[in-house]
Length: 180
Figure 1 (cartoon, rainbow, N blue to C red):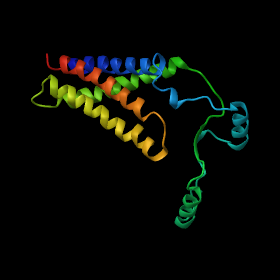
Figure 2: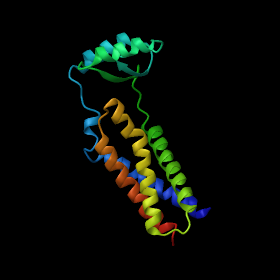
Figure 3: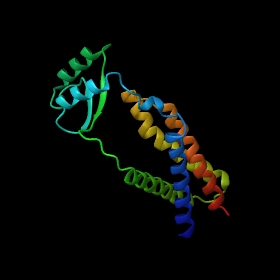
């Protein structure tokens, strides 16, 4: 149990530290949050259109549309501009809460990975390292890359680099720690 807890805590800390570096000190994620031209006018327009916070695809068919209406909407969208908008009615900064949530999430993820890796038999550095890295890549493929496929979100490359570095660090640590 001690190996699991220490392995998960340190592994999660390594993942979190890499994420912090990649988002703050390196320009890796610059394409994901660019400044929009005429941002004040855009916010004014969006505020007048949205009554609730949420993510919106523009244009899209109504959620109650028939299959024919959805097909017609998609046909009419071909070759035209479209957007995915994340709208929030008020900006609030709570970096302490966000940092703690990010750290706890990283630790929980590393604990899960650590638990899975500990169940392998026989275990060695290489197996532990590769298992950790492959679990991280599976997470990348399922969330960030799937979003890139369907919604053309930016950051596929930077998120993949984050995955490789963060889970390689964690895998190196767990490979050493769990196989001592």
